[in-house]
Length: 130
Image (spheres, rainbow, N blue to C red):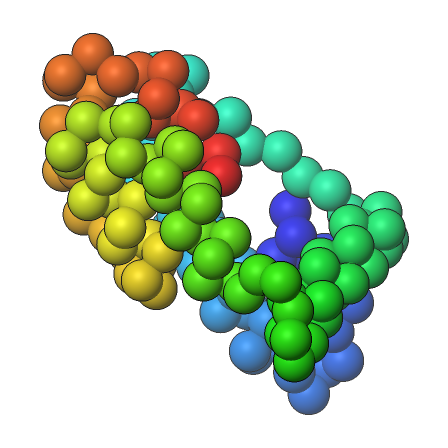
């Protein structure tokens, strides 16, 4: 939906680029269809017009973390998250979480499947919602 919203609001000169976002979104939904069908993940859409407060909060947090002399850094926040959440997951899900954190936006679905096979349906669902 966000890709379609972007496409509709884009100038004709940029439609070809916006079309790539629509194509990528469609491909993503097809690739995660088994997870959607199994109710492991739930998708939702928030229109751009409703994201202002969340974007402002995110920007404020990022700004505070980037200030010289800040009590915590972005890395500290992620380390705390890993210590309290990711480290409690099964090894395949730990690997998945760490890959996502390191910037891998296309981790292998085998890690999700292994996590599901080990009975961590609820944890897989929560990790994918993060």
